[in-house]
Image (cartoon, rainbow, N blue to C red; front, side, top):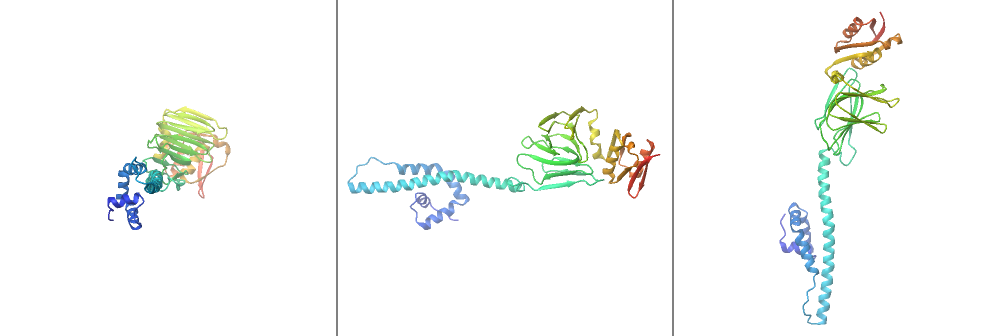
Length: 331
């Protein structure tokens, strides 16, 4: 595009340019070169307009001439006021439009999540399966069998937020301007940057959080609980009670992501619940009184039959597999 000369530009700004010149100047001012010129010459434009409003103290040769000068001054003042108003509007609209372009670019890079509700993704680890998710900020999440996590496809500018049903181990990338929140059945876990394990399956009456490193807060029922490393917080969803204990070996809460099962004085009821998720199998305990039996053992994930043989060896129970169902009975 050919740049108009200074005389044409100023004639347009003063409102005296012919129509064809005005169109040419408007088109050029909308270009990148024209916007730069406006930015550089903004103070000069206001100075020039102000001078048009000044009335000098010259000798007036006649009444008729005085009338013509006053009429000319009034016209120029009207034009000046219009220009001042236009530039005041432009002074507001141009930055707004510029910021709009910037935000549009940011929104585009963030998948459109700045102005609209971001698209939600649901990820499930099926029974017998474990998954690892790595987010765009470097945060890594291990999802245990039977767990479901929902998260936005792109983080928002002010926060990172996910929802969890089940068990997951989080390695959250630190970002104070974008705190990380995990929603679990109406409760919230707020994080800046840390590692922790959450267990919150729908069928469980409790939510368990083991903090490995860093610091987090747990919020439920209008109360906030701050946790320190090597602590286990247990929240009872039934009576709303909270219990916090110190852990001698907090890493034992995360062995599952290494395909290791670790039971420490756990009831048979808890054991078969875990095994059901890990092996995608149903258990039928013929004698309900057996559900309170306690088990303590650690093992890598063996074939199901091999694991059941090990459990038979350390207990007085019998495990038979019939039509894909594990029947539990006394020996």
